[in-house]
Image (cartoon, rainbow, N blue to C red; front, side, top):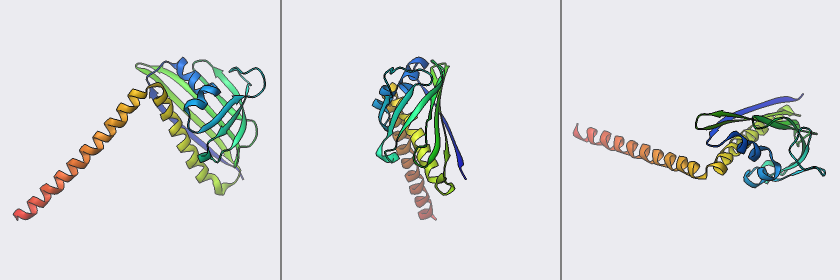
Length: 183
């Protein structure tokens, strides 16, 4: 019995929807920045982003190095687009990926949706975990590609906050120690 998997994550990126649309959906551009893909290229001679265009993808070794063919569909530049696997992808009967780009003040809200159908129930959880990680890293890398300085700033702020919290914990422990000594 096949089991469905639905994953949806959003992130706000400081860029225009048309720039993000091309980065996310153009196979050659996508292969340059997405660590989950080692190869992405059009199948056949046309080689342009259009509905029903076929693309060959190859995942990285972390994703078992699976290679598959997908067909683009629901392309509405620069608002949304996606693809669907033509045949099964490893343990998945079907794999689809959809992108939506919603312009908001200060940037674009990017939503990545991945749907799959696992062939065997016992493999659902590990495959879902792998796909969840893939979606997260893809969105983070898209943000880094567009806004490398902003992503570095966010990482630095996260490290500073973690360091500050550790210092506060240490100070609280020392204060508690000092209070116990006074008794």
